[in-house]
Amino acid sequence: MLHNDHSQISGDPLRERSGASCAIEQVRIAELAPATRRMLDAIDTVLIYHTPLITRFRGVTEREGLLLHGPEGWSEAAPFWDYGPPESSRWLMAALEAATQTPPTARRTSVPVNVTIPVGTPAQAAERVQASGGCTTAKVKVADPGMTVDQDCERVAAVARELARISDDPHVRIDANMAWDVPTAIAAITALHEAAASAGGLEYAEQPCRTVEELARVRARVDVPIAADESIRRAEDPYAVIRAHAADVAIIKLAPLGGARAAREIAERAGIKVVVSSALESSIGLARGLQLAACLPVETACGLATAQLFAADTVREPLKVESGRIQVHDMRVDEELIDACPLPAGCRNRWIDRLDAMCAVLNEERQ
Image (tube, rainbow, N blue to C red):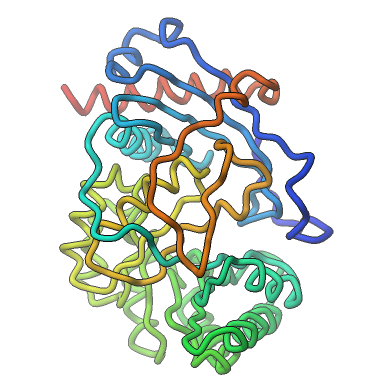
């Protein structure tokens, strides 16, 4: 089961991946419920995976999900466990689309990416920049339970200094994941903007507050651009934040939005700067996000380098960052991993149950 406490893992977050393994088990489609089989009609292989992360990330120490194979290759559906069947079904819809429909036409063969900086010491944050594969943009996770604004400022300052040392065009972003009220957000963003001074200040602050109205109030009071994430991907109306002039940047995540076509439509209609990001998928899911980013007419660094947080991946050669970019190409599940080691107790059954529940939602929507 995933661990959702917010204590930090001790030790070096850049520890080597040796010794870690990704467990992958195949599910016989014939064993699935009839309604589930109908929804997966074009899918020929269903796998369940479970793998550790190299450091605690937003309270999560492990990642697990579904891998599907269809006529267009492999895809991934890995909704977090605090999402119920209706919201999780968007992730399955995205995976079904990716595995069965031709991907959008790419405009480029590689995509610039940012390095993601989880909670840790300033020294560890700087090391992540150094080990990022040449990223000149960093997104720093802030407002984690147990961390103070001063501690976040120290980490942001360390990242900004390191980026400025290696690049003439450094960028620092922060992501608060809806943690602040309006007064706290204003004060924190102002302080963090100053902490990032060696990199020219903050490029933007992502989802500092929970509601669209709060985002609009913060945006009116700070000099830092505001990015909307949850207010787009978890909203009944993803355009509400745009109409309210509550954001300068739209964070687009393929899986939670139901697939590349839905995500692309939102990106194109938003009318503001767009950044394509991951939802902490393995390299299989990230490859689909890269396809989406490559088809959009933007060259902004995307949040698609999060395979660096996996201790072991679902593929033989995980996506690699070189000169701050990742090449766009199809990824294949490492067949040698399939059934090589068992999933944790209960993992298989809970994902089969969850797959049934997600398919039930999609079947009901079809009727």
